[in-house]
Length: 165
Image (cartoon, rainbow, N blue to C red; front, side):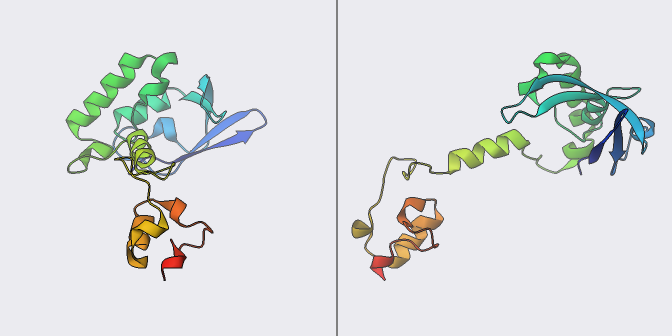
């Protein structure tokens, strides 16, 4: 449902190569259209965060058409109100991602929920850490492993507490 595009580097600039888009005028996304990037910042992985500009602001157009979300973390270098208003209009009109019954999870919320579900230090949300000798059964150890207690699989072979077999 999201618009997919490739930015191809050429010696004299960038080309936007659209994959799919429906709804609004396709001219700004026409195959082979030259675009420029207005770099706003760099993300934590060192990637450029930029607005893609042709005759129009492509980023804003995608948000307006419901093909992209306004990523609040990176709106500081942009006209934030313009992006948030465009997203609000798209949601009211039920364009693009906003047509999904019950809505969809925004990518940053999805990633945050996966991080909070992970148990990096081997504890449950309540703070419980298990030891193989107190679990009682091999089946229970496998259940705990599936719940995220990866520390129970000391040799990383996909089986927890093999001593309980």
